[in-house]
Length: 84
Image (cartoon, rainbow, N blue to C red):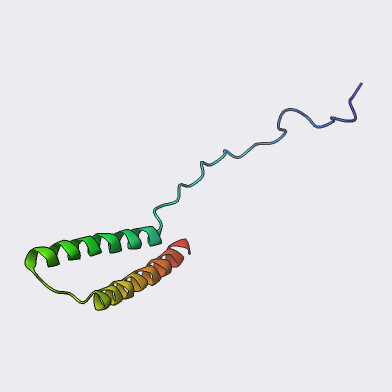
């Protein structure tokens, strides 16, 4: 006597494709860029203190943010190109 509630077979009837392991995402561009900014700021602070230089903090921040923005845009474009 067949069971009308559970009439599906317990074993697969056809060939099954092997389950692929999920791809591990690589490092994110934003994290790398902001980590680079922190490193550059630390190096600038150490060099200016040791060499007795005087850098304008506003202009330094402006150039660092400009570089960060350019790096983020370039990383985004590279990510789009790599996905295609």
